[in-house]
Image (cartoon, rainbow, N blue to C red; front, side, top):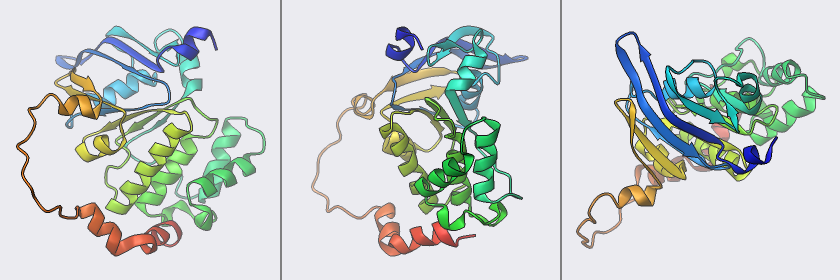
Length: 265
């Protein structure tokens, strides 16, 4: 890797355009993602979030503009980009016939890595799936499948990971578990580009948030910077009420987490 690749942004996008016949999906998208950060691309369904991810992961070619991932051009250095990234789509890409451990071993073997069994066991432990390692994935809950899917995407230690709406369809407990995993990825130095339509998800996770609307980035900044776009609210004394998340965790607690990890179906 060159010095420019190490020092520059993990992702650089400028003037990205994409149309499907007469439908203009991207109309000149610009943004950068710093290394080791979590960047949330926020937008409604149909805003173009998945299209951006597909272009950055070399699954789709842009009509115009430039994009680089880990210092490699997505158009001319696609093979180098693919070696640097991992992509987790909206639906878990796991083999339901195999066990959780077998899924991980298979991916490690496909990547020609040494000691696939140890790699699988380490990831099972990291993602709290050891107790369910020998079970077929068809018996896993939605949250367990998503954790396994993300674990599979980390095999080979990619420097950049794309998470395309990773918590869609998950229950509240599973969403919180995925959020914790995403935070840990960034803490270990992985760059995360997260697409979501959930405002609370972007607020909980992202170092920077870009709002994609009608094919353009209309605002891009930290949560603090985005809040400064609106005038301060009138301050009144109001007794703080517990949030729904507080209530949920207080009722379910660790028992709910153990249930989701070990026996939930």
